[in-house]
Amino acid sequence: MCNFLPDRLIDLILSHDVVPAVNQVELHPFCQQRSLRQVMEAYRIAPMAWAPFAEGQHGLFTDPVLTAIGRTYGKSPAQVVLRWLQQKQIVAIPKSVHAERIQQNFEVDDFALSPADMVQIDALDLGHSLILDVPSLNEVYRLHGIRFEP
Ligand SMILES: NC(=O)c1ccc[n+]([C@@H]2O[C@H](COP(=O)([O-])OP(=O)(O)OC[C@H]3O[C@@H](n4cnc5c(N)ncnc54)[C@H](OP(=O)(O)O)[C@@H]3O)[C@@H](O)[C@H]2O)c1
Image (cartoon, rainbow, N blue to C red; front, side, top):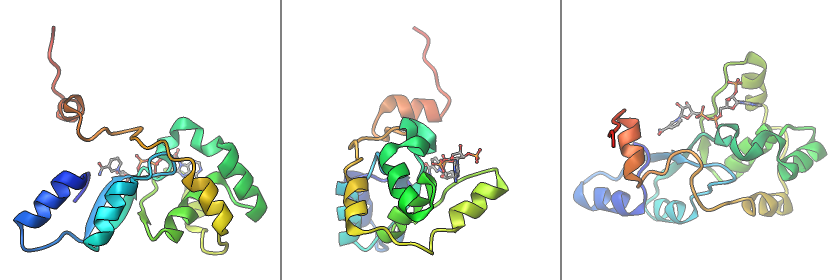
């Protein structure tokens, strides 16, 4: 399942006999979903990060913090993000159409971010969605391709 925020997630859990195993949500350094992740942890629901690179928004691939951390390990900002997610035990589903980037995105098991690195990346959180504002009615209409003329 995907895009369940705390209120609908708890409602779903309390209305059914089976607790979901995974909730796939927008999750990247700029949108870290902290309160949702706390709820999911309490119910042992695995977080899965869609758009782990924020689809490149907010300058993720040139972000100075991610770039500086990556430089110390010989890794790209993308790899730093994937490693940060892995160390937080968050499943990531990065997307690329380029073979070399797909390969690069697998190469995140040969280094480890320090606690100080993790704190720096945690501090990048903007606390809101950049891509899909789930509770917004306009987003629901947009996803269903519905436009109202004035
Ligand atoms: N459930 C949902 O509501 C939902 C919503 C959105 C997305 N998703 C899923 O989430 C997955 C990924 O999301 P997404 O594609 O939206 O965003 P994303 O993975 O955050 O970003 C994809 C972008 O990053 C670039 N990229 C990938 N690896 C890179 C690297 N190592 N260095 C530099 N650039 C790199 C890609 O470019 P190139 O392709 O040109 O390499 C592409 O422009 C997809 O499977 C998608 O279906 C789910």
